[in-house]
Length: 146
Ligand SMILES: *[C@@H]1O[C@H](CO)[C@@H](O)[C@H](O)[C@H]1NC(C)=O
Image (cartoon, rainbow, N blue to C red; front, top):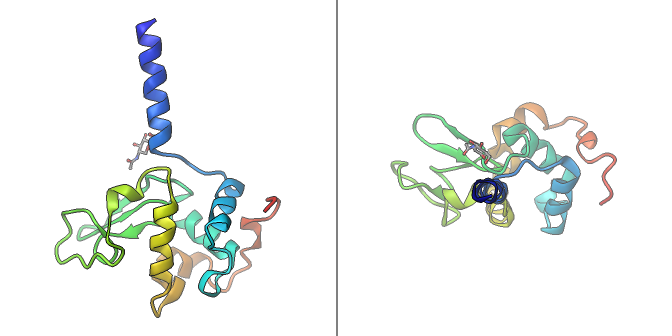
């Protein structure tokens, strides 16, 4: 019995720490938090970017050797978040990178809004440039009740 409760606890704990969103669930959260049309980018563009950056995974991370990208939008530790190990980090979002890895993505969204307000706009995200820019991205929200 003890073991069962223990496993249940671990399962719940893991679930609260990391999550892979379904496309329509994520689209809803992004919309509620004001990303639809934010800085001129449609909700489908935000969805396309998040898909190719993290496959909608809240705890995705990628270490490129000199900095690391964190979370569903793969926010970078040199420019935006603080992971305590990136030399010369600028910290534009004044947030710890670790807090971008849990399933509460409201802070990720706040930081992404800051990123997209820079002159490059969504061009800050390489995956968006490569896979979403000037493409028909409507399929990323099609069939979602928004
Ligand atoms: C993300 O979370 C899942 C489930 O908790 C875990 O298996 C995986 O190792 C985590 N990935 C990272 C990069 O932390």
